[in-house]
Every structure is written in C-alpha cells, then in structure tokens.
Image (cartoon, rainbow, N blue to C red; front, top):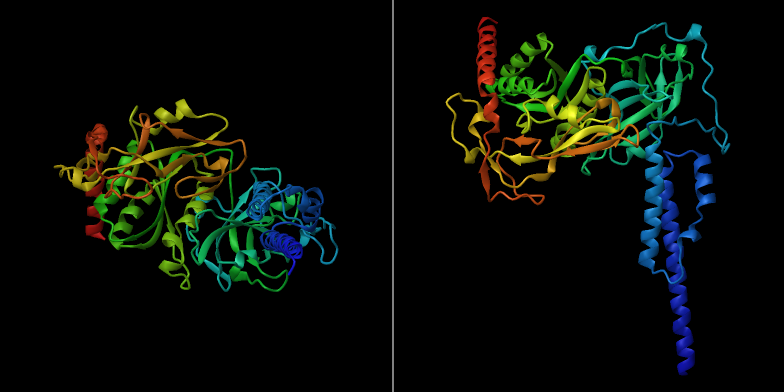
Length: 495
C-alpha cells in the first residue's frame, strides 16, 4: 500500500476517533445534565441555560479529550451550585404538563373550605413526639418547620430517602386538597450510604399571609392526588425569629448504650458553667438510668428530649451514624426559636475558652453582622495521658492533650437563624451567601475531645503536652455535680 495513502487513512481514522469522542462526551454531558437537574429545574431555566451557554463555547482549539471532559464537568457543577444557592430563597413553581415555560399561579384558595386552624402552628417547645412517617418505599418524613426568613416562606421537611429516589418528583400536600411542588435538597454528609438525609422545601399554597397561617400540617407524596391520608400528615412548627429565651444551646446526636448518670450530670453541669442554658438530646437506644437524668433536667427546662427511633427498614450499616446528620438539622431548625447560638457536640466534647471562662467572652469580641458562626479546631485529651482525679470527674482526670490540633475533627457554634444546613464538622450552607464562618484561634478557644487519640486525617498521636485549663471550673463543677447527682439518686430510690 502506498505510503501517502496509508498516511491519509491514519489521518482520517484520527479525525473519526476525535469526532466520535466529542459526540460521546456531548451525549454524556447532556444525559448527566438531565439526570441531575430534571427534578430541580423547570423548563424555563433549562431553555435559558442552553441558549446562553451552548456547548461549543466551552471548547477551545487543540483542547484534549480530558480537558473537554473536565471543562464540561466544571461548567455543569458551577451551574448546579448556582441553582442550589437559590433553594433557600425561591419557590419551585408548577409547570403545566406539555406546556413549556408556562408558569401556573398559586392555587386560588377558598377560605371557607380551608382548615379552620387559626394560629395552629405548634411552637418549638412543644415539639418532642416526632416519629418517622413512611410515605413510600425508602422515603420517610420526620418533622416540618415553617421558614419565613425570606420574603417567600417555605415549609422545610426533614426527610430520609433511599439512594437515587431523591431524583423523583415530590409533591407537598396540605389539608384541604392543596398541593405544591417540593424542592429536594441533599444534605452534604450522607457518606454514600443507602439512606441519607434530605430537606424537602415546600412553598405554601398561597402567597397571602392571612391564608398561609391556615396550613398547619403537611405531607409528602410522589403523586399530586390521592396518595396521602390523615396519618401521614405531620404538624408544622413555625420558626419564630423575634425572640429567643436562651443565649446558648447544644445539640447532641442520637444517644445509645449504657451512658452513666455521672457522665451525663458532669456533661450538663460543665456545659452550664460555660454559659449553655439549654441542651437537646436525641434519645435513640438509651438506658433507663440515663433517661432518668435527662427527665430530671427536662423538668428544670434545661433539657429537651427528642425521641429518635429509626424506621425498621433502616439498619446501622445503611445510614451514617444512626441518622446523625438528619438529627443535627432537625435540631438546627428546632433551636432557631429558642437559642441565639447553638453548638453540635458529642458527649465527650466541650468547647473550652482559653482566654476567658465562658463562651460569651469570645463571642462578644468576634461576632459581626456577616458572621454566622465559629469553627473550632480540636485536641484529643487521651485517657492514657492523665491520672485519676479524686473527684471522679472524667474531665479533671484527662489533662494531657495532643500537641497537634485536628483541623478535620472541627466543631461549630452557630447562629441558627443564619444557617440553612449544618454538617457534622462544618456549616454546609448559610442562609444567605454573605454570611461567613470564623475560625477561632486555639489561643482563644478550642474543642476538648475526651477520647483515645486517633491517627487519621493527618492527625498525629505521638506527642502530648499538659493542659490543665479545665481546672478553673473544678470548684463550681464539683459542687454542682455532687448536688444534682444526689437529688437524682434520691428521686430514683423513691420511684
């Protein structure tokens, strides 16, 4: 075969391969875009997006196939992030079937046929008996909060959804046969488990404030009509933004196992010395002895106990840490009406000031209009580094901390009214884009983590240094600990 002809054939083959690759990448891009956005964007947004951003604009001369793929992915990611930012502020309007770009108005409500529930929203202090409601295979709703922090109010429904089912279309149902389209938001730390946490945002069926207050419960369905019953409706809790009775609170993730009464009392009393006025405990599988302690503090209005019983279909290995992320975000919205600032700590974690004695000492100095919260690095206070304290208090016995701070196992203290979604170690989404988190210097405060040091995520456990800053609380803590534990034991003995 002539050499020139062979060269021509090779050149044609290369061109065919490049063209085929471009066609394949374009098809992948279009399919991926439809898959990710079809439940989130209406037809109008799709039309505008592709009209303003045709695919060929992203391709440059001599661009490699890898670069093309990366460019397409980055563009899609940026557009998706832009849309996600709008979830907290914009309603998801109805699009009539087979009628592109036609926006239906809010349903006209006849007041005489709407439920007669004047001012029927329950308050956060009355929320305590939530249970998971199964609305379909792999879909469970837990609680609902009326969020009117923006001009357009939404009902935020805390939901557990099985993988891939979040891409389905969801409908929000209200008493009186009214419905709106639900907008699904995936929480950030589901860790690729089969079940994960989601927030379904439901616009109210009316834009008129005097009519909005008539809708006091909500249900979620995969159908517009005929797929709900009375038992699937859950009450809506209104977020009241005008006054919070407590300055500081703590949300504790679902508790399980045999937690000692002494540990709980020490945790609560030390938290109070730091300035905490209210604590939210999610009771998963808790012993009777531990429950007695929480019930004692609940009567003092120091503690709220929230039942946390996962559906039987959900097993320990199918959801992240007993549904911790859903509990955290339920607590975030629950606390908005009650506390000005809330932390999300485990029972072995304390945010300890090292340049003051209470949280107020650093909050007053660091707060700002655009600051939505504070992030704290952590240090391990390993049990092997200390020695037993005569008081028996575990915080006084573990006084050797890791020389290195963990920048991964961070915890946050936030203003809940400024947050849309919280993660386990960070704020996932503020309620407004201009809100920022502030990292607190370890000379000011950091998280004391009272557990065995773990060498992962860049952490080193080969060096420990003495840290007895906790001793400044000893006298007050010991007095409160002895007094409260004595009362609790007396109550238990007479019960």
